[in-house]
Image 1 (cartoon, helix red, strand yellow):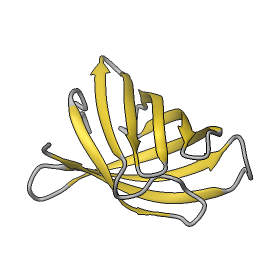
Image 2: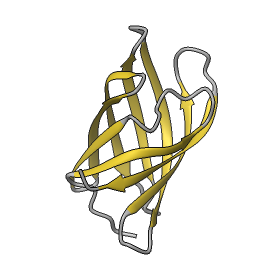
Image 3: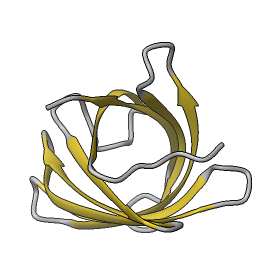
Image 4: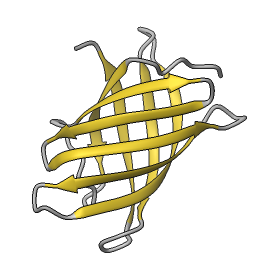
Length: 115
């Protein structure tokens, strides 16, 4: 699956209890070749960034970091599996793990939207 993520926007539709991203968090993705980066903010997130690589199977291997509303610097890693919705938008199914804080794991889903 070859997907162009450049200049696409995503919002959370679900997240595990120990996640900090919620429906108010907006991600702005950019892409050059197989390299992806994004900024995100909103809800409990003051400012966040992520970097990712597109894998041969079309999934994204990514690392993220953000400052939350408590002023904590949080970091983690994630594997995202894309799904193309019937209307052509992208849905990402994400399995994530904190590499700071409580080191918990979780699952989230984000969907593309048009700002």
